[in-house]
Amino acid sequence: MKEILEKLDKLSTNRPLELIKEKAAGKKVIEYFGDFVPEQWMTAAGVEDFLIMRGGDPQPPEATLDYMLRFMNPLAASMVGNYLLGLDAVMPIADKIVIQQHDSHYGRMCEVLEYKGLPVYKVGVPADYTVDISRAYYREELGDFRKMLEELVGHPIDDEAIRAAYAKTNEINAWLRKINELRKKDNPPITFSDFIRLNHYTLRVDYDTSIEALKQIYAELDNAPGAHAEGAPRILIMGRGVAQGDYVVPSIIENAGGSIVCEFLDEAIRPFHNDISTEGDVVDAYAKALYDDKVPQCIFQPAWETRFEHLKKLIEEYRIDAVLWYQLAFDEIYDMEYTCVAKWIKEINVPIMKLESSYEYSREAMAPLTTRLESFVESIKEAK
Image (cartoon, one colour):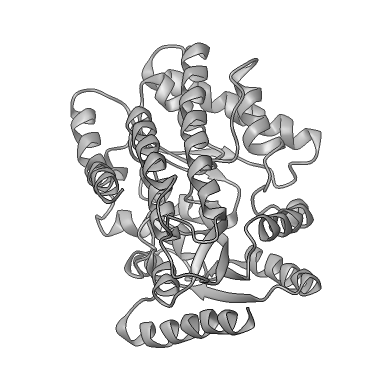
């Protein structure tokens, strides 16, 4: 598996250079953010796409302070900061920068990019997905996005090409689910650090390469020995996202003898539990899979009770010993949700620890962070 991951890492790292070459050859390039923006449509249109999901470095958020208050979550701020620091090689050449509007943090970051004169395109995502007017609005937004794509490439997008792309991502999802199922074992054969990287790679590498790599990895892991110490505490990590490059916290937990066997994350991870129908209207199929019927739904308030019921299901299925609430700084919506989750989870006697991150991993910050996480893991061991 190590060789496959190294190959995928190299392909993922080289993706921006490929896009620069494709742009020079006349291809259209879109950088985008969010599950509510259909990557499959861009592929079907012949557009080269690149997902914004880089985080873990404190410098990019700090670079936005000349333009924005500091009270933005660091993943959203990194979107702009990486551009300002010249760390995002794709954004300056992108024909469009498509960003879903589901959260004020990303809305504010869009304003900075627009101020800088970049070609930002917004996809509106209403918060209350349970009402008909919101569902109709999101479908209209998808329809407008498709029109924009067709104008960009100069030709209609074939529905069959979209369905073929849905089938490819469904196949990626299926292999990720098979690998994920192995994490239910007493001693899972893959760490969370490798599993989240694998997710990130599939969002960078082409579909066929991803599918072949996932097949090979599953074949290796199916009867492989455990990747953790016997009896390691089983931990679920929950929050907005573990971004590409933000691997410090999981590594500390794993080095301390903990095993993150399950995640409940909303962003910067492939939504591999949610397949898209390859039948019927392609707009409706996408909206149903990623907006109407998705469980767990995103951070929207109407979903909190549903999300907690899903959390309880995960705790039971993966035999979770404790939950790590991994929250990004200044993320007030997750603050509010945590208040509810912390109250509800007491009723099922599962310990939970809240960790708030501003991507500050300096030498001075690492010592207390490591101590806190090691103590968390040790307390779970003692309670088992």
